[in-house]
Length: 331
Image (cartoon, rainbow, N blue to C red; front, side, top):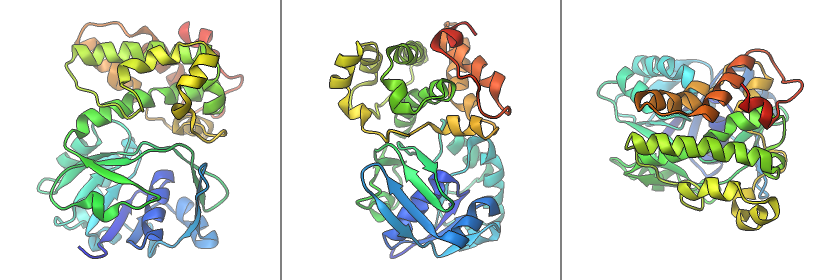
């Protein structure tokens, strides 16, 4: 299909960045979002940058807070936070054409299933966004880590239609395993949020890496017991990641050089959610592992401690003082 009409359903940081790069590459893109997000774009335009030197001005065709915009879509990319998925599914069912595939570009495992339940008869697919995006000045968004977007294979070669040099997109018939691999890495979101540190600075401190490694070891054990396959989204197999994280810092920095190609000021999305007093995606991350741990009668004490620590802080605003690894383990 030449120039399909694409609607970004729930434009926040990821939605604005992905939609903006699609528009910059010549796609017909409209953003559906809240006035708090869209008004700065109307006033200042949409500028996209990243740590590798990207710096472009993007011009989506339409910015709207009216879900009726979904009616024009040939493709819908869902980018809301997990807690808003069911409501977005209801809006798509009300306004979106059944001929438009719906692709979830969200954290967590169950968002595509939630959309499918709300959208019987629609072509709903899961997806995985590997990189982090943070808001900067009004109308500006910065990608702070790297990687290819992965979407579930299905009718139409959407990966080829959407992919560009600045936004590589591939498709996979193992999307569930890809999502679990991303979830394992996203468990770091809680660690970073509690540390109060930029991600790169946190990774340079062995005590924080050991906490990350213990959490991932527990999660891998739980997934193995549940017979859930995992496809790594890191440069190495997921089973190697805890071993690498536990290395002394000088050796870690040499071996994990590719893992450290991130913006020096990057923080995870959960860190920004806590700072803003917003609800986090904790239940879709640590919560998913703890549910499986209970179902398989396995302990996951580090995961549980991180869950309790984040839950105790949600809605309170910036953390002061920041947690330490020892304080988290004692939760």
